[in-house]
Length: 382
Image (cartoon, rainbow, N blue to C red; front, side, top):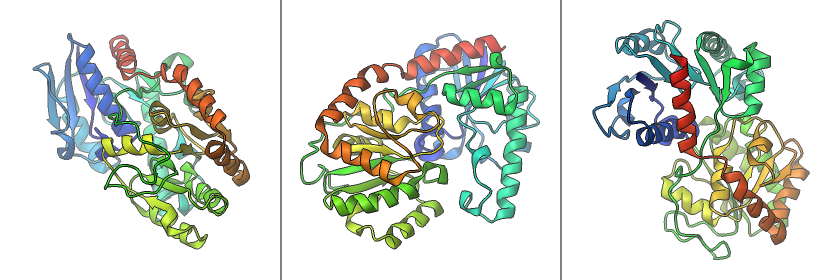
């Protein structure tokens, strides 16, 4: 078989912590397990060298076309179609409407369908947001109607796809993400030391950690308000936010100033390397995920992998993924969120319970299993 992969979002630095990591680990693990098929990987210039090419069965092609652009609809299908592939995998919903090559698509979530009709859900004006949402719905409808198979990452999202998009259950396959090897392990940090052990991050401990983008559905504004109460009760605790710096982050920084969070108790770190992230995971007192909508959620699992307990929103796919390995709270209730923070800061037995439960939970998520399942899907989709 000749298999194509749209890897323009390859790597967390280019494609983001979620989809970028997903594509990176899919390719790395397919290269380990598949000795039979040929692959053509479509990349942007900025991540072309980052993607390995282990042998002649793997071909890398520059498709320097940004996602959600007009060129994605006009130029990209011509580039892909000329390679005469048996199947091409789009790891995101943005399949060009004019593509002729058979494809499978991964739909990570339906969050754009749930965004409120508000400028707060976009960094542009209302008209631009309306056009963006219209394009999303049209492209999503094309992808789900024409895909040989639809892959998603949780039963929660599968049910949404079936019921909200009218897709037959037999066409949707759940393949969980992995977490092993996603972040390079660093030596275990002492959570009780004064500072974490790096000149890169002069952050006083204890601190809670959140990793990801700052889109509205991540509910970080509510987290800031909860922390503003929490830090007055526990003035030695800090909040560390890791993720892309953009207009959404600027809004959060302004909000933090307006609600008087002490500036030396909140850190917006932006993009950091995997070893640096691993160090933060290991040093954090606990990890917190306040999202109201989430397709899967790799970072809290990575935190558990580093021996750091998790406080989690009881919403969307999060309880499915984390199971009993979390202290849960209502993402719309500030006091509920504060109580979860208080529990993981003060209750050592509850921290131990979460980490003990995590052993079985973490066994469910391996990138090698993800790659094997997707390879089977490729084979049955031709």
